[in-house]
Image (tube, rainbow, N blue to C red; front, side, top):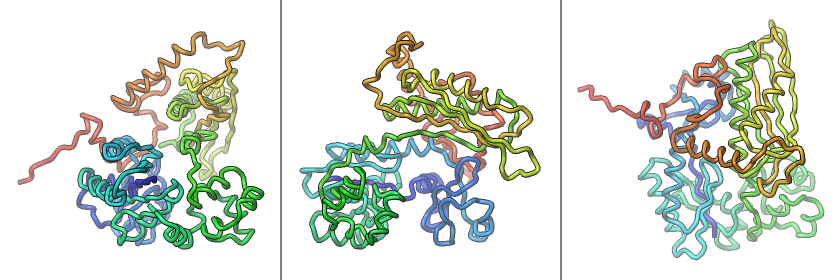
Length: 421
C-alpha cells in the first residue's frame, strides 16, 4: 500500500505560516518578476482568480478583495518542504520524495494504515501549520486520486483510502480523466476520440485494446488504475529535457550581462541534472527581445552545442553556453529574456567516453561538483558559484518586491519579534 502525502496549496500555505493574520483570506504567490499567479488559496479562487492569471489583468480583483500577494521564494519553500518530509520519514518504513510538496510513503504491512496517516497529517499541521491531503491505495496512481478526494471533501478528514474494489470503481467513476496521473493532453484527445471520458471507462477497456492503442506510459497507467503497481517514479521524474529561463527585471543590451544570466541558468540546469543523476548530450541557449515593445527592434535566436561526452558538469555546460550566447548576440538590441535548455538526457552511469574527450579526469571533476552541491545545500543556494554569474545586483535579476525573508535558512533574515507595548 502507498500513501501519497500532498501539501495543500503549498507555496501559499507556507506564506500563511509566517503571516498568521491571513488565515481564511485570499493569498496568491507570483512567478518570477511578479508577473503571473502560480499558486493561490481556495479563498483567492473564490473571488475569481486562477493559476496563470497575469497580475496586470486582475489588478481590480486583487484590489477590490484585498488579496495578499507574495513573490516566489523557493529557498523558503524548500526549507519548509524538508521539515514536512522529515516528519513523514520518521513515521513510515520508507518515503520517496516526488516533488517539493509531494511524497510517496510505502506503508505495506503497517497496522491501521488510515489511522496512521491521519495521525501523520495532524502532526504535520501541528508542527509546521501546513495542511496536507493523503491518498492511500495499492498503486501510486490510485493514491494520487485518493489524495484529490481528501483535498476536495472535508468529510475524509485529510485521508482517503481506496482499499477495495467498490471504492476503486467509485473513485474512478467520479474522477476527471484529465486529472489522472500519466494521461497527457495527446492521450486524453485520443481516448476522447474513442468515446472514453472517465477513468473508469478507461480502466474497463481490455488489456489487448490498451496495448494496441497506447504507448508504454498509457499501458502502465491502465495497470495502475486496475490495482497493479508498475510505475517507477524515478523513471517518471527523469526529464527528457531541462529548461531554466527568466524574463529580466529590466531590459539589457550588453553582452556581459547576457552572459551572466545565461551562466546562472546553465548552472541551474547542471544542478538539476545531478539532482536526478543524469547527464546531457547538448545545451541550447536562446535570447529574445520584448515582444510587447513594438516601438523597439525585435530579435530572437538560439544556438545549440553538442558534447562529445554527455555531462552534468557545471563548468563544461557553462563554457558551451558561453560559446552559444556569443554566437547569437546582436548589439543594439534590448533583451528581455534568455534561457538554457539541456537535452539528450541519459542516466549518469554508465557513460561511454569519447576518444577525444578533453576532460582529463572526470572522477575528480565529478567529486568537485558533489562538493559544491554539498556546500550549497548546507549553507544556501549560490554560496559557491561561478564568477561570471555576477552578483545579486545584476540588472537582469528578476523582481521580487513581495518576497518573504528566508526565515529558516539565513541568519541575516531571521525573524524578529517586536514589542509595541
